[in-house]
Image (cartoon, rainbow over all chains, first blue to last red):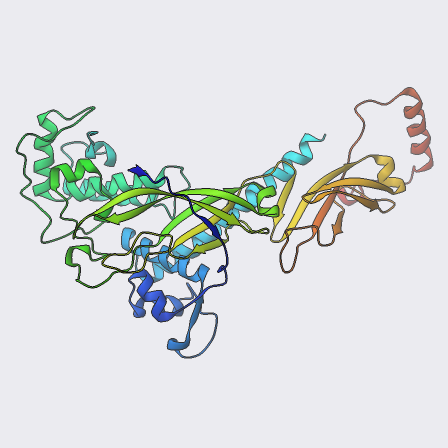
Length: 113
Length: 318
């Protein structure tokens, strides 16, 4: 792998980006049907109610969709399994964070004794 | 080039049945999937496992690989036999389990680089422009950096098109200006900084997920910062003004009279900055001096007599 020496400075300006259903599909090479199903399973949610063609998704929805796509592709999960896996992974992640936080708090409290 | 032991990658023996191989692959794919595993090199391991399965699940490729393995590449450096040509090729079936564009040089030297990726469609690439792939990267920040904003260097892998069917990995480095107030797990999109497009297609984007490194003093809860502040028994009993650290510098905090360990005090607006800045929560912890002088002990005895009715264990029913 060649190391690219070029370094560019980027100023963030678009953390609030939104994507239409069409943009979401084009970006991930995903069928709209898959996205619609994920919405119906509550895996991702559009920011707005209404017609599918008017749906707008935020950045976390896009990254979650891409994660769902990778998991489905690599582990051959069906939709209910995928929805459940993503929920459990979210739970595991928030529990890990909570355990880390509590451990640090405990260390602080014990360390001062 | 390094020889890859596909049997070792899947943890199976040379005599493993196709069923054993499938079972081992499925188990390891779940274990090392980068979206599931927290191991540092999960990504690499997952690719190795995928590549190994790609070869060993196919009887033809497996036979070729076994031949190569016998030829002497079991350890260390590997060069394919002179005039080696794979008969399995990749014109027809393409890849089924993994992304072919990310297979190793070792794989390519044996099986060629037909490279029919299902996802990008590079095997059947149309003449028209194609958007470059999006790239995901993680960026670890110290809490101070997230609080103040900072400039960080991010290195990630993009794939450049080499010819009509191949992509080549390249490390790309960007300096990214991170705004103040980024939180753990937050995503940033850098438009057009992913892999280059093909045939004039627009480049993909770079997505960065921010991770906050643990801080020895402060913990983060949403937009709030939590800090434990030790206080002396007399500060807790009488009330006092104490200096407490915040990410924005020291501030003075007035303790109420009779504060106990675990009591929370709020410093408004001293949490993570942003449109709606968080608060800093100060959790009090009453600590005792390591040793007391005789005079202090006498004063404690006097206190014990005065406050004799106080039972700190009343909640325990004793």
